[in-house]
Amino acid sequence: MFQPVFNYRGYDVRTSDKEKIILPIADKLLVIQRNLEVEKEEFVQKIESLHSAFIRPVEGIYWP
Image 1 (cartoon, rainbow, N blue to C red):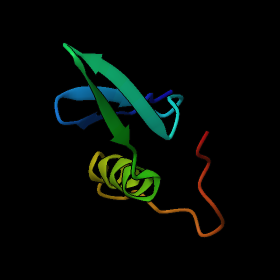
Image 2: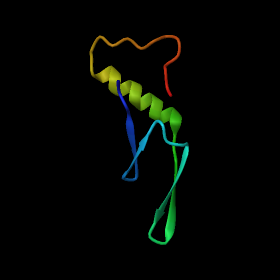
Image 3: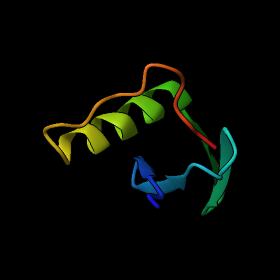
């Protein structure tokens, strides 16, 4: 099972994380607004690159 991790400005974000992540940094807050569509596409492209005969499913992609 693959557990993708995406990096936003040096912070790792998992698919199970919320769409908006708020991190306290020193005396400020960093708000990470995830781009779920881009994450999904990057994940599928990465899987496709692992095997030259990979076939993208026609009907939907499972994404938690």
